[in-house]
Length: 138
Image (cartoon, rainbow, N blue to C red):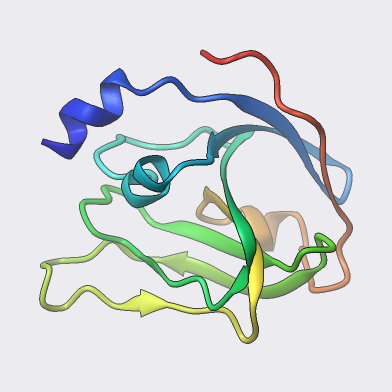
């Protein structure tokens, strides 16, 4: 059912810079888009990410339900400073064993990336993040 809904949603996109790396971001900017996230997708390209946006800072938990591939996750605070980085998080094997990952402190944005991005690009908590305004919906 969620895959059916995902295919019919219209996603805005924007540009995210992680250090000097430019990525096209698929924006998860509503409750249903954030709930679905990258579920059911076969992969995410190395030059793409999913950007989750929230209305305020909180302890934003992410899980890997119905994922088909591992990802790296970066949590950002309201100033777009990196709060927490998690690498190569595996998809859940079942709903009972599906771990939820949390940031070290409150965050307002979450970036999900192709597994290996953080290591390949030497991303640390000091890496600068820029988010450019959304492009038209696709």
